[in-house]
Image (tube, rainbow, N blue to C red; front, side):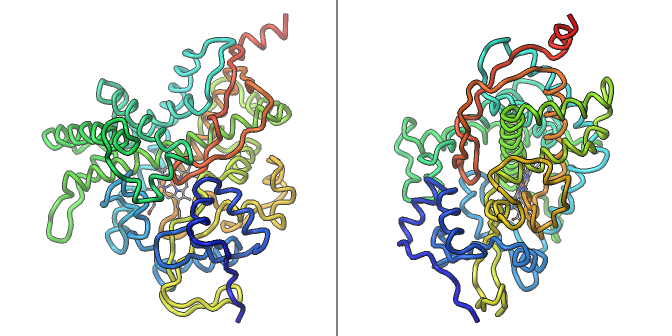
Length: 457
Ligand code: HEM
């Protein structure tokens, strides 16, 4: 049996680099150990294996719940954000039941309703942009994805409470926007409330204000139960455990927070990256426009969803920057062999999605944005894996892909945008995910309709 390759840097410095420069950390390790390595960045156990080999990932993730488990308590890094009762912290039968209950919210007929809303939101957002003025792509995409998720989670589209939830959610998440502030999640000793002006104090106060709104919504809903409603809050309120008990207010709050946060920021970041790459490579934009124009005026959202080049562009965006760098942790339940290494029971593993997507043997010239690679070759579910796999596979995958395609299609069809400068945008830590540093500065040139008219003139 082979020895597992261990990084020699002391644990504290590994963790420091992982927080400040996660890409440098992962790429440095993969240069020495391309398939898997033992890291000391996590707080659970002495060490954890980063796994970036597709067959190994398949072995781990398709045996979820049997040879490997996906324990909720190991995800406690997200508790300051989503609380103790989030689906991310659940496991076993309750985790399975809650996933089954909520999954239909992100599939099938529901998508049609969201499709209309997404298109309206993009139109409204574009009206607010001033020609010639710089804007940040991320704030535009956040605005759209937040309103979509509020509809999915609460069934709300407008109103004072809805506006306040939007505003507070943004400040709450923007707090984690730099490696320095994100470090508060990784080093528990920093989580000290030193008053409203201290970073953690600000974080807690913003969270309390957001909680007040969530609890107010829960209270109102308990008083006015409407069996026709299909939003996530209504579904969760119908849950009963074996003793016939409903979820408590705190359990409901934690799930609302989970879907509110996981359900919009990830997609907004992916969209900001998408807009960056499309405008960084004018030939990609041109090809997309040709494909979109071939559908004629106001095409059905499902036809947009099925467009091959648009799909390839979205996949390549998620390939090159998968937003989530890692899967949630998995733990070996029995002695097991992985790529010729013997793992003891209790060994903790993280699927490294970022490094899988950077493998030269799967993706030649991996730093190059090349959507064609997705047209020329089919990748297996463990070679291209931005949404993870197995029992914790992302619940919002279908919604996220639908949103990405529709928002990009609508923005490109309606607006001429450009990058504000030629500098390449680098990935930077934002909490537990990777974001485009600076949020991608862009300029709104004109509406595309008038651009076409000028071309003809
Ligand atoms: C581009 C957008 C997104 C990306 C890249 C993404 C990525 C991921 C990844 C990598 C995981 C962990 C999977 C694993 O451990 O195997 C995950 C889990 C999860 N995602 Fe997403 N996600 C996105 C959008 C969404 C959306 C829109 C929602 C909700 C509407 C959502 C809800 C969740 C939830 C609830 C989990 C935890 C599932 C569990 O613990 O059972 N995500 N996501």
